[in-house]
Image (cartoon, rainbow, N blue to C red):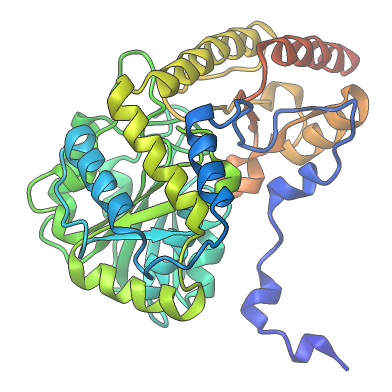
Length: 391
């Protein structure tokens, strides 16, 4: 059988993840700066809650929308920390990670030929998600010189009569760029009178540095009604494998997403939902003690890596969010993928080429600092050795 005639062409045409390629090459001697996964254990109280529920035996499905108690906690979280109010029973949907929330949002609003603006360099799932929804991704290039922020000039140039949605992924993976209040003001001015849905991926909202605070575009007057806020527990709570995310949006949008969710996924894992309740309850009770401890350690690692790369001659803007640095490797004369291939082979250090996040990532590499400080120190020693070998 000729499977090339069976498998949908748009699926065949999408390349596999540029991150996972390197993940699959790791061995016990490799220092991985590749996959964006916290090295901290899920806090004990969260794990204990899930264990207690598991010990009771039967673990039933939850409602399609997710446990009401979890949705109530999320509504409280969004109101108190993001300044956005949602009805927990009608405007919040619990998903299998934020990635499923992104997929549901795209499938709910994008039709054949609809254009979706995607800032680039970009998280690897956005462009394929648009394509799988029969949409047309429109890259909006952010630059090293602009600290990888979305500019109003670039947004205006990207909008056409076919624009249906825009993905707003800040704090950003892979660049660590953020959009502050003053950055969002002109963006809101452009979008407020247009029928363009904003998919605000805020999975790194709790990971901002230098005294900066994340601002959700949904908190601006007139923007809540056209914004789908996407978030989850993976990054800030170190709960990647629990696969727990959520979407918050006006009821008609959530109803559409829930319809797709209930007919394809049914519900998010029940033990993970109990863990999510424990995470938010503990956060409010302890003033987010565990989250802040992890964030402070990420900040220490961030400052170390930025200084180290600049000292090595690889210009690195200071990222103000997430847990990635995105240094330029143009001074080496190597392309991004060649640099990463040779670095892995020579020094057993895994980084991800900037081109994994779109063509505009050429000349950069992404390094994740969600690994131990000691590992980062050793990685820098090995990277220096590799750079010396190029001279």
